[in-house]
Image (cartoon, rainbow, N blue to C red; front, side, top):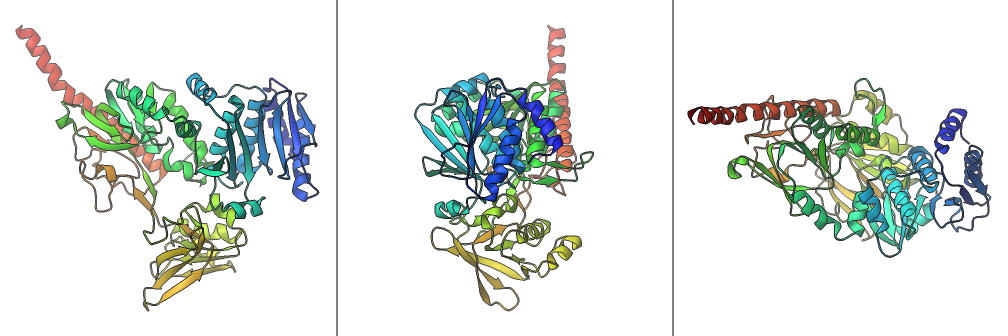
Length: 532
């Protein structure tokens, strides 16, 4: 099952296993069970501390448990955790085997202190780059606290179960049989949901912080670059972010990051966070900003107010709040989000195997999505508002070569409809003839560009008609001491490498502002001292 190189790498990892573990398989006569058995036997052959047993009694087959011998500590997988989930498998082996987690002691104690019993189920797809974080977070929590149980389920393999539970996006997490949440989640995010007092404690701690010299709002590529450049100046630097990594976390393949031929979004996001934490930067994650109060009203300090009620103060601020997927804004879109309306074809595509779907948007993202989905679903209809596709010609040629794809141009989506539980189709209007048309389908993938995360700044800094923060060549906004960078700004060409450069520019601009605005005050102090 595993090739020689992968076996060599895995064997090295398994040397970190401290306590004996068992791989307990529940199998049937199917091909996937044979593949799983081969995988587990390969793993067991690489370490004397790993044993294999075919005597599992789980109703889901194929599935297996990684169990610490003689204890009730275990992690479960239903399916073959390969692809993006292979890392989850390796980490589960190590953590069940006693290798210490990379978590702060306070977070570990918070997990151990959770009262009650929790039964989590996570549906994933092997092509989903968002799923591993959620799977790994819940696996780790279940190892630390025996009252937490977790099984990860390959939705594509257990299609009947997915249909019965109406799972239409991944990752989808169920707690005690009810939907707990969807989308990428970290340990801290899950804890915030389970530990109801966590948000109040975090707000108290944030409120007590001293003022910063540079406070970066946002943890994507622009924010990470700004934090590194500011911290290297030896000044007090903080980062407050809703989720560190930003939209990069939702990016599949990255092939234009100079000097790195290929990487993936979550991997790059992890590297960004690790780089920032190598410096003396106060990182406050899972915090959403709601208001900016300029320094002119705060005695020389800019204030950033957070959703949890806390406030942060700083001599300068760098806004790098990024952007999010733009919505269609039509009836039914919100109602059927994660019930057939999706925004990530890589993540959710496998759940629509053999079904009919639509992709809304004819730019590069939309055409790429249609091409990817065509290899999974029965049929794809691509809907473009403009009179022609806007994607690169090489992508259009590939799209036209696919037999199960139709393209509708001059088509305006007007409604998504369903039966109250899931999508049944959409209506669109022909912008030339004015006629309305109905498409019967089971999934709608929206790929119509980005919207800057700047609503909270409308009455504070100057914004463009598109809602982007207007900046100059130094990243300065219309508010003194407030700088901005990345996809939330008017900088052209929304690219990761450009955002990083803009973040560096904004941090240097903030540092220059600090030097120039503090010089007069220091000179006056010196003059007063001489006069005295």
